[in-house]
Length: 376
Image 1 (cartoon, rainbow, N blue to C red):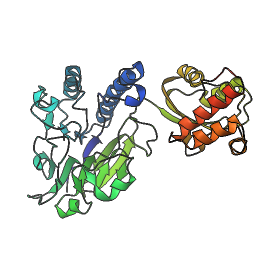
Image 2 (image 1 turned 135 degrees about the vertical axis):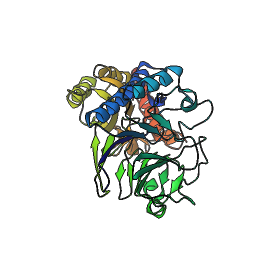
Image 3 (image 1 turned 180 degrees about the horizontal axis):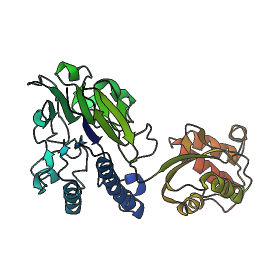
């Protein structure tokens, strides 16, 4: 019988992430990067609270191209503070191992073990339990860690690496690329009972593997209950998993229908009711039919959101629909007038739909003799 063993597992924290959507050099992006550090401290706190036997990180702990000496010092001290609890780090495609990486240059405390080879290497967690880990040695072109691999020796065997399970790939966010691809069946075929993984930001608990998901929001629209995974292995080898929330920032996806609002103040009042009591980050999707008499500008919405949120993003198209003009465009384009010709020309242009909407609104207002031409 195996002695019980408890692991806290996380991945894809992405310290020093750019947060381009917030403006990489803005105060909002700076706060988000600091928030990720607080999240790591919370993960370490979970490991202490559950008296974990080890802390696992399956890659993308930080972003190699943006990492700073201050980040290296922060990581070194954070992991040293939980000694003698062992910390196992398996570099991914964003924090790949190289001679100039934090992994190579940092003066780690004795409790930190960095996997440094592209082939799985083993360490003994305790008698009868072996961990096999591997590293990405570059930002791309890492192959299947499990290809031609077979765990040797007695006892039970786990793996720790950053990779893409092929069947789960289609469920990931748009733009996600495959790195170190493998099939779920490769895990037991390699003599491994379980693989603790990173790369996919959407969490998954499968029979033979665990994706914790990114522990703190990096973008809007992320779905699934994510966090640090507390994995407890019982004497018979079965693993019980639970997730602990560790995020330092709450992200909200909100939808504001402006239909029926007869003035700018009516829109702002509706927005105030929508966001009441909320804080953190917000993506606000504006949709519905906007009355052409409403003098509403993007700055009005941004200023209103700035009183409650650290960062805000506004868009005009989403799953609930898009922002539409309350002008009867179909009727206007049939007019044998300057207005009709203007509408036909704009609709026949190659402008994106949102830009067409703004041009139509500003142009029709100008033709009506109005001066409030800066529109959503």
